[in-house]
Image (cartoon, rainbow, N blue to C red; front, side, top):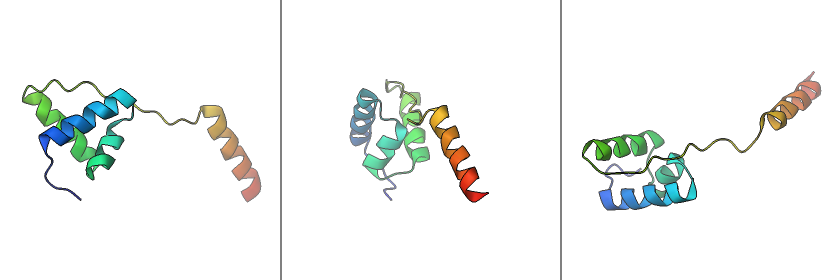
Length: 79
């Protein structure tokens, strides 16, 4: 895992992820860092005055009905 993060690479990865609505996880994967490390880096840069855009929240693509259907099927199979 990368322990030092180049600011220019980070900002590029961040803005690319914002443009794709890909989330902080995408930034972390691209830079080979933890999600917590990516969030912390964004916070540090913002405190220094860097105008990083807000990252849109990325939600699970599965809706509640789909998830409940999976649970119902698995409960019947395992019973």
